[in-house]
View 1 (tube, rainbow, N blue to C red):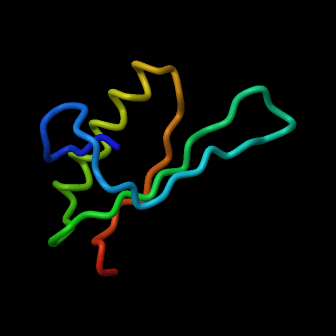
View 2: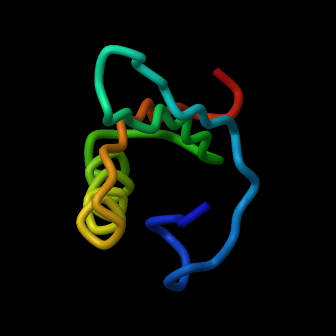
Length: 72
């Protein structure tokens, strides 16, 4: 998993992910749960989602994300 607060392409503990399959469409999206240590505020969520946006463009995939504190 990419982490917005670590060097590029560093693998991190994966909280959970799922690729949603929709039989009526040829495309599907990735549902990603991102669990972070420490407080989660709008700025941290924006950094994570910005990195995910870059991945979406690079791999031509749609990623939906939920960003939460690991202890929530």
